[in-house]
Image (cartoon, rainbow, N blue to C red):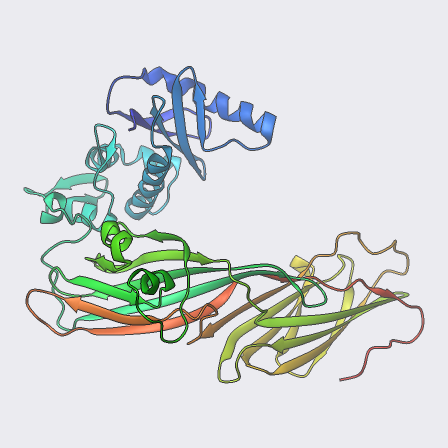
Length: 436
C-alpha cells in the first residue's frame, strides 16, 4: 500500500511526514508540486493520482494543505485516497481547522495519529470516535491511556463494547435528492435519484441489526413473489460495518452499527421520473423594462406537502426597480446573485401558484444574452420518496435481550434541480401577460 504520508503547505514544503516502508526516498516529495503545476498547465486541472520516476503520488488538496501519500506502482489508489479523506476528517475533528498553523501546533499528536491509523502502509484504525478514546489532546499535550480501548483490538473497530443507554432507540432517515434538468416545455432532459440511508444509533452493548428493503434483486434471487412496488438500486455503497459477503449472497443488510450518527449506505437510481415541481415561464422585453410570469405547479400527490420551497429566477445584471405580485408565498429581489427568489413555505401537492415580476432596464442595451441561465428550485418533502423505497423491517438483536424502538423517516429534497426558461418575447407595445 502506501510507502509514506506527507502533509505539505501550499508551496509544497513538507510540514510533517511519516515513512512506513522505507522503499522510496523521502526526497521524492520534492517533485510533487512541480508535477501538479505541470498537469494544471497542460490539462487545466491535475488528477488526484500522478506518477513520476516510478513513484505514484496520491493526494487531496484541502484549503492551503496537501495530504499526499507516495507508493510504488501497482497500488490500490482508491483505498489510499479514501484514507487521506478520512485523515482530513480526523484532523478537522481534533484541531477544528485543517490549516498550516494547526498542523505546526500539533506535531506530537499528528505523529501518534499517523502511527495508529496506518501500519506498514496499510490503513488500520480510522474511526474518529475510537481514536478520541485512545488518543486525547489538551493544550497541545498528548495523553495516552494505559491500555487501549477494546475497540482497537476488536474485530469491530468502529464500536466500543461498553456503551449503555437507559432508552435504546434507532433513528433511520431515508433521504433522496433529485437531480433534474427540465426543458422550457416541461420535458425531462435528464434526471436521477441519489439516495442515502442515515442512522442515529442509541443502543447499548454490541447489537446486530438486520435491515430489509423492498429490493427487487432480493425478491428475484430468493424466488419470492413481490407485493407492492420494488426498486432496483445502482451504485450501492456501504459503511464499513456492513457485512458485504452477506449482502452479496442474499441481499441482506446485516451490521453491527457505530454509536451515534453515520451514513449506512448510499445508492443511485437512474429511473425515469416526472418533475415534482414544474415552473412555466413567459418573459417579455419592452423598451426600458422586462416582465416575467412564472407559474409553479406541485406535481406530486395532494396528501404530500413541499416545505421551504425556493424558486430562483435569474434576471439581467443591470435590472432595477423590481415589482412583484404573487398568488402564494413571498418574493424578494437578490441583486447579489442577479435573481429574484419566490419563497413558498408550504406548497401542497396538486396546487399551483402564479407570479408576475417587473424590472426596469437601461434605455440602451443590446440583445438578450445568448446563454440564459435556468430557474433553480429548492424544496424538501417529508414522508415521501420518489423512488418508492420502503423499509420492510429493521430487526435488532443483542445478547442481553433488551427491546429497542426503531423510528423511520422518509425525505425527498432537491439536488441540482433546474428548469430552462423560454426565450424572451421582444415587444414594444403594452404587455400581453395576464393580470393576477
